[in-house]
Image (cartoon, rainbow, N blue to C red; front, side, top):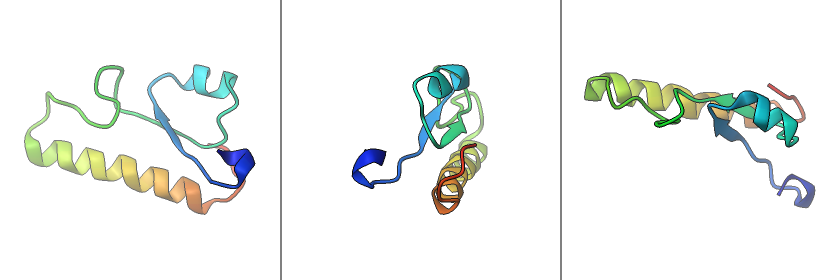
Length: 68
């Protein structure tokens, strides 16, 4: 998608693999099973975690051309 001009952020818990396949923008997720959350947290804390991860992804998109 990047080659077509669509900026992409990959959220993953496997940072080395994301870098190996050439992902330009990577946000390290919370864990393998729940990349964008943590089911063991109380609902309000999980919501805050999810918001933080999405904000990191959006910030990464703003930093055009920068790899994380």
